[in-house]
Image (tube, rainbow, N blue to C red; front, side):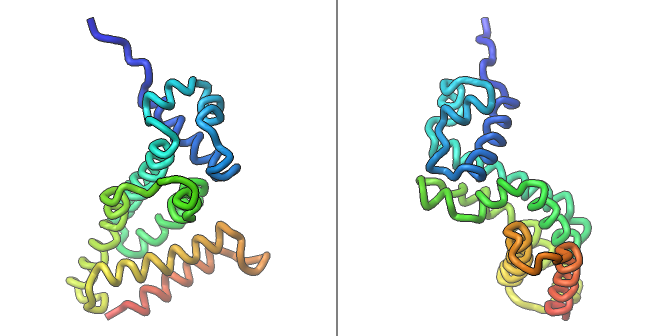
Length: 191
């Protein structure tokens, strides 16, 4: 006789989402597994059973963020570099807590929590592929594709981070700024 499934994938996803929001709001030092369980309307036993301890839960949150980001980039890949750039900002604005956790460094300063290297590296694959495709087509400067991808990522990441932090003129039209920056990036790397 099969044992009933006690902890479902939907509970796992709920715990990941709740944890991201709590850590973003309160900081990693102040969030307890009891807080996470209460917010998800489950028990701490469920959290321990699905993730182990707090460090493993936080790592799972960051890994899940990188997987979600990767999936959005894969979906945007047919739009080339421009499509990837637009998808980057869209994903960040829709997942602000995850974005800050993935790139803010707050978790690593508090607990042994780094994204799994393969998961984080996979997030860049669509951009590297788009760069290589554009170089093969002769529309992008010839240079190591990974170097170009990191340079482009750094530029869009910086703008999105400034927008999320609301660092800039109070009346900034971030969508227009971002669009202009994507155009400038494309011109700067054009062959």
